[in-house]
Length: 310
Image 1 (cartoon, rainbow, N blue to C red):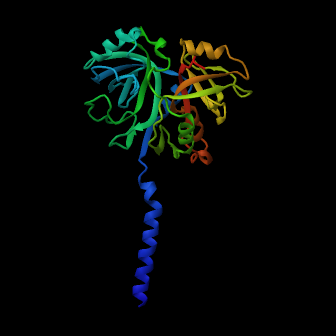
Image 2: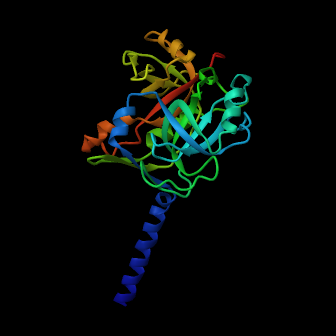
Image 3: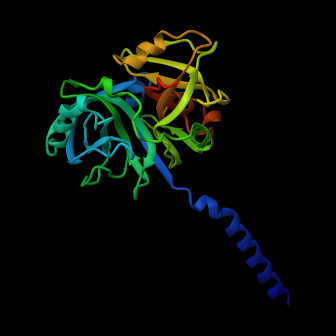
């Protein structure tokens, strides 16, 4: 009888544990291992310039209702990871030369400048990405990856800064959903002599529309490549309700939106479109402060458009 009772209790406990742990099993975990030299070089840069060997390029851009981007994928010695590159607003006529060049670039080396972006969104079947390690064969424009140059700002000398505007006919992500997801995504950071390891969960939410508000914490500072970085409040674009406080914003050099931000003053606000990426400056800080290595995923927002309809 005692043995039967024990087995019943054990079965009950295992059933409860199984139910409680089921949601955690559904969360895809991704490990990103970055070289410390790379982190130090790009933590305070808006952009990257790299020669990318293109292995696959899309024959045409996505429809605007999907996101309007032109995609290609390849590798770069500068990056050391499978890399996806994307032209924003690729269906706009002004970008046709660059789009055509990228569509024809399969098998070629292309010089690309744009926002660097590390984000655990497209892990696919892979869950471990090590910078400088072996890159799986790239056969399409969306291989398992955590690194993008997106949006592209120049390709083989053709400037694309004017493409950073809201995408017509595309529905951007809801800011309350997006920023709540960013703030609750779990993450651990471990430092080593030459590398830093980020372990986190998969998350999406590209192209978010929100109101950016400057306050007393919003001193504009230059990035190492001539862009600007600053902290701002995130508000609902429709009613100005506060969504997130003190979020790091990044604006690329040579863009019209950077000029608009520079003209703002304390208390001003503007509706923008942004794309999230991992904040390498905060990764570096947390790597040297073990008490902070269990905080949520460190993120910042790349500014990719000003919504002049507001």
